[in-house]
Length: 165
Image 1 (cartoon, rainbow, N blue to C red):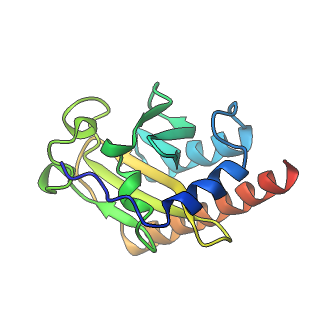
Image 2 (cartoon, rainbow, N blue to C red):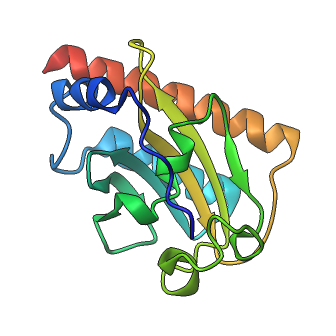
């Protein structure tokens, strides 16, 4: 397993996330609806809105898992925040970064992973909208466009929430 490197700008990225006052908040229907739609639309057992702080990825909304967070060093999300666009792993068992990751080898058995980075207007990425399946797969161009559109909708909801707080 190869943990994602911590970016040089992580302090500033974390400040943007903290300023949103969203970490450890109760579920919100508007976010729950997005992950429920994503799970159904892509026919995946797991869909998450994952926010990455110093030591963990915390799930603001989730379908298909009971846990509310995992350690940052085993997160796929840590890799996504370093990417400018979608991050897709067709089969994590065949990827040296993830093959022996406990999220792959144990429940939730994240074999397929697609993450859309949540880049805020500040330019910093605070987390992901992600899809997880227990079997290998990929996304076609239409599915990637749908995931990107869902991410954009989520970014609007996050901006609205930030303005309200």
